Image 1: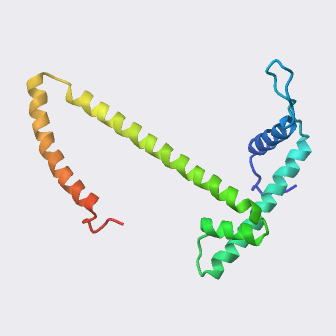
Image 2 (image 1 turned 90 degrees about the horizontal axis):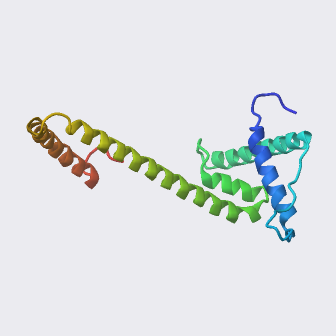
Image 3 (image 1 turned 90 degrees about the vertical axis):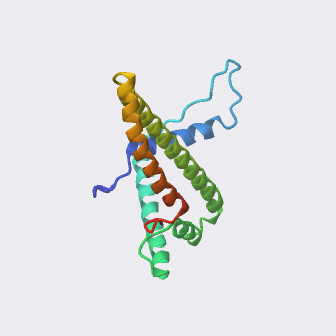
Length: 171
């Protein structure tokens, strides 16, 4: 086995192999009538190392092929399309469509997670602003709000320009 420091995480390999093995073992399992599930598969430590080494070699091979496709296109950065073209070129075309669907699902999940983080951060910021604005007596707070509103209005005008794409630095 290699010792060059690019080993895949063993826990991930074990989880993937055991999950698939359990699915395969339970495929025709009718159950025991008590809601129990089928047998779990066991894998030797050496077999997990072999899976890990095979996965690493496949990743290296796929990377080299995607890199060749990228260079043929006179580019230096491998794109998603390069990876899918490499899968087809390596004659794993039957996996191409399921992989594309899985990739699209991952992108949607990542976008939803990012939106959730952004939403949580804005709620937290608003709550801290509300808490900071509510300190002191009502008269002092209202005077402070008037000054903040002027600044907010200027910021909104700048933000409107950015949203319309009139800002020269917008992509």
